[in-house]
Image (cartoon, rainbow over all chains, first blue to last red; front, top):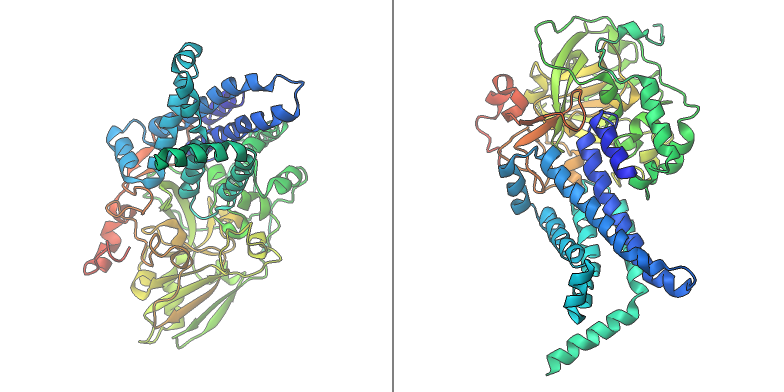
Length: 186
Length: 331
C-alpha cells in the first residue's frame, strides 16, 4: 500500500536527501488527490448507473482523513520532532497553517460523523455538515498554494480541477443559495 | 587536463547510498505508478520516465588541494549533495537538476571580472583550477527553506580574485551573474520549468563581504570537480548567508558602485532581502528560521532538528561587518 511503502522508504533513508519534506508533501498531495477522487463519484455515478459507485464515498473519504492525519502527524513528529513549543507556535503564527488546520478540523468532523449510528441520529443536519466538503477542498488548495516557495503551477492546476468538479454541482449550489437568501429575507 | 571517471576509492564517505540501490528504488516507484502520486501534475514526468534509462552522466575529475584538516563536522553524504538541489535553471523540483543537467558543458568556460577595477580579465576553464592554489573548506550550507548540509567544498578565496583585479575606490559592491543559455538550461527556455524567473540569475555582496576570508569561489567538492547540479564549473559559497546567495555557474563578476539587483529579492522583496544573513531571530514571513533540519545520514527518524545559529555559526568571522546594521530591517 503506497502510504506504508513510502514511510518505509523514508525510514530507511531511501526517499531522497530530505525524507521529512518528501513525506509531508506526499501525504498532503495524497489527501488532496483522494479528495478530488471522492468528489468525482457523485457526478460519475449519475452517468454510469450500472456500478455501485456511491458506496465508495465513505471509505475514500476516510482515506482522505488518514492521509491528512499522517500529514499533520508527520509535521509534529518529524518536522517539529515533538518540540511542542515549536509545533504550537507554528500553528499560531503561520497563516498557511491556520488554513490547513481549519480544513483538517472540518475533515475530522466529517470523518467522525460518517459512523452509521451518528449519521442516522443527525438526520437532515448530517447533509448540511457534509456539504462542508467543498469548503475543505478550497481551504486545502489554499493551504497548498500558500506553502509553496515559488512555483504555483501545481496548486493552480488543482484549483482548476476543483472548479471543474464544483461546476458539476451547479444545481446543488443554486439550491443552497436560494435557501440562504430566503432565510435572509425573513 | 584529463577528465576521467573517478574510481570508487576516491569517495571518502562510505555512508553514500549505493548507486544501484538508488536507481532500483526509483525504478520500483515508477513501476508502482507512484512517482505519479507525488508528481501527478508534474511538468517533468515525461523527462523522468524516459531519461533515466539511457542517461549520459557528467564526468567529474579528481582535484589536488590542501585539506581542511582541523575540521571535525559530520559531513552530508555525497549522494545527498548530488541529488537535492535548488537550481531552477534545470527545474524547480529538487531532483530535477541531477536528472536534467547531465549533458551540461563546462569546458570551454569564461568567467569575466570587470567593472570598477584597474585590471579587467577573463578566466577560462583551466584558469579556474590553475591560477590559485585550491584548498578544501568544510562549510555549513543553510537553505532559507530551513534545512542544512555540511559540505567539503574545494576552491579559492574570492578575495584573491578581486585583489588581482585591483578594485578602485568606487567599487562598493560585487555583482554576480549565472550563465544564460536556454539551449542547455531548460528552466531558462521554459517559464513553466524554470519557475517564472527572469534569467539570468543574479546575486550580489558588499565589497567587505566579498573580501572576507570565508567567501569562497568553489570549483569542486568531495575531492572532485563540481557536478553540474552543484553549479559547475565554478560557483560562489557564502556560508553565513542563506543558500540562495551562493550563486552557481558564474560567468561574470563585476565590481560596482551601487547595490546590485538580486534575483530572489526581485521575486519576493518582503521575503528575501539583499543581505540574507542566517538569523534565527528574523523569521521568513511564512515560516520560522529559529531551527533547521540538518541533513546527514539517517532517514525519517533521524533526530536532526537543531537550533539555527546566528550567521550560521560564523559570528566570529563576520559579525563585525554588521555591527551598525539593523538586521531586522536589512534582512
